[in-house]
Length: 349
Ligand code: NAD
Ligand code: IPM
Ligand code: MN
Image (tube, rainbow, N blue to C red; front, side, top):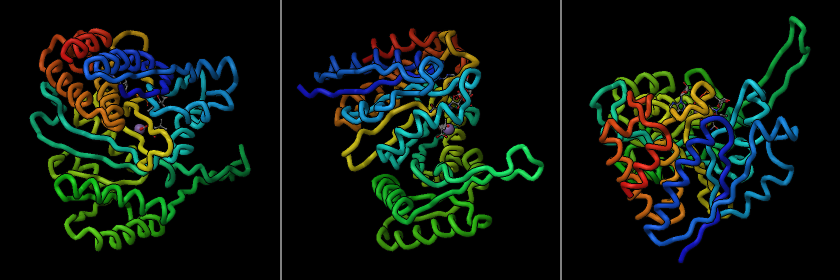
């Protein structure tokens, strides 16, 4: 029997609630499809910070390294811990340390769901660069508190980093409709984004079967709302991909629907799976969180581990369950609680 060690970090706020729901679903799928999931729970996050002065232990990353995959709920509790401390102390170092340079975020409607665009059919795979660019952390502040204070945040784009992300995008486009939308802002950003365009051009010679469309990020954002069906695979930098994937979530019906996979394609280091949304302090602890994004991310984890049938069964169960208004959380206009939806998904599996 195949067995997988999963490092589980529920994190903060609704992260804890949606992770509990997801684990129930994943364990039910494991039982049904005959493999073993061994989750190890790590209670790291903002409460841990308040107690210990750090978001995870000093050897936290080496503890995670042993796992076959990492599952994360959400990180952040701005009332207790400054976001720049919490995210740079847990989520972002995992992405960087394990070189999870691809962040895959699928955006499509499930049965019974409808975003604000009503009835529009779309199937977008947003591929976000995940380890460099605008999130490089290079910069600093001088003359702090002075009227002439300056803050600098430098984006770092490397040929290695851009090329491997774009290549991943070309490969995905080749397996789907053969269409790749490259997102930049090369009209305003004359170094990094022109560099990105040049590498796209170079690679497109290797992928003659893939049609590349180039969009500036502002126009792409508008187009995702007016013509979402015109996109298939999108490749974007760390920040642009972050923003476009929240638009993707919105057109799916909200942040409760958008799943993500932080992938290290070499498989030498663990990949991490998490919903796109955050800890949602406004609804945390009320049982109102929509667990669909989290469960979908769990299905992406099983697919990554090679348990394709189980992943497909979870996606089929999500489609079954959401077809009934009784299984909808308040963000979908329903009254179901997080754990009721999880139970319905388990039953459907
Ligand atoms: P958020 O995603 O937590 O919430 C934005 C809005 O979406 C809120 O109104 C919230 O109620 C709603 N929402 C989010 N998830 C939902 C769900 N599953 N079901 C129903 N509604 C849901 O974004 P924010 O408010 O900007 O951030 C809150 C905290 O989370 C901050 O500390 C932020 O830095 C952090 N954050 C973490 C991650 C992550 O860990 N991957 C992602 C985004 C934000
Ligand atoms: C996401 C989040 C994170 C990001 C934040 C919390 C640092 O918004 O996963 O989309 O920007 O990557
Ligand atoms: Mn985001």
